[in-house]
Image (cartoon, rainbow over all chains, first blue to last red; front, side, top):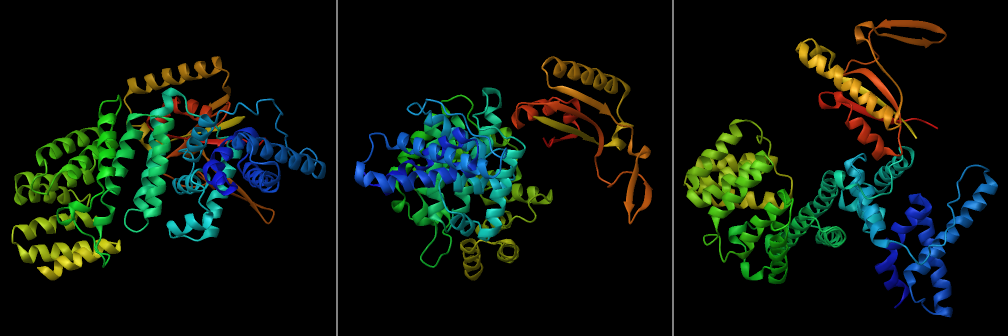
Length: 391
Length: 114
């Protein structure tokens, strides 16, 4: 195994453990670089050690302690030196990875910082890569990360896995970050979606809670349709027009299996229910042959657990498929009348679709125009423009 | 590590709270303070009089200026504080979440410089 492969496979694990041993993110990152620099020097001569991970952790730790000793000589009393213990062979790497995840996604950190820390520290993306994904500049993002690390140190956010009683709430915050990363990559950044799925897999492997499984299922099922979601012109293709033969069957099989597992575990919630809906879509041979009654039923359960106008809107669209467009339209008009989704482009787009199916062209046109005025994502805008042209 | 838990709530709403709820809140506060004394978190706490009684003081160019009222007008006002000793932020958050006012107001948890 070459050093580059070891870096890809082990660097995040080594970092997670170094943060615990050294008690400081920046020091651990320096130590990680030091450890790999030492490996580059010594492995070609001495051969790759039997356990590269332990070797790297030990090397990183010794170099960090060296650094601290030097700094302490320069600035006395400034740095505590971590205790040297004899546990180098017995690092609890699984727990350290979870510690890192829960610390990066700590709800006391700014939500943007949670995402940035997760992508940088857990996924190993560079600051530049994260900045590009979130349409911000590298210095702004670096600032955010510095602030988060300062808060972790100064407010003393512990490097630990939450206790059982806090776990649901803390896990929810982790899952939210993962889902944000996934959604950021939904249209244009397959790499981000892939990172999110990798994170989801890691979570399920480390902490097989129902909702972690549910979220992974949801992401895998959405990703299975990636190739068919936009056409060559970058225009969004709605579900009913997608070429289902191009959906990734292997991912669908995996997603469906995960949904089944999540649904039979205790404590499943919104992610699992959304994944169950995605599974019904994924398994249906066509839009007409979709099990709409069951989808409406799942939305009912989802709404009871998690009342939200966006879910109501999705339910209305499913009702339209089950009972006819006029029924869906009544529901959407009622939601819009409450004013909650007035600024949400998909509410107007969904309404426009139903008006179009009912042949009420002038009304459909003005609803599409309203949707277009609110939509931001280019693939969605192109679809709306196409609909307007077709009317 | 020491954390200051600042308790914010809407002064204006207090007039509308029924008598028995106020009594219950007092009991809850008393029980909470006893609780965190036993667990070793408690250092000191006080409730504050309303912002009607507040005075803001500034010295600019050596000149004293005194104005009526709090430093900033906000929806919720500082109504009291608990200074606690906690293992880390998670521990402090757990304590802050049990402050009775957390149910109707907000608690700002501020680490103290050491």
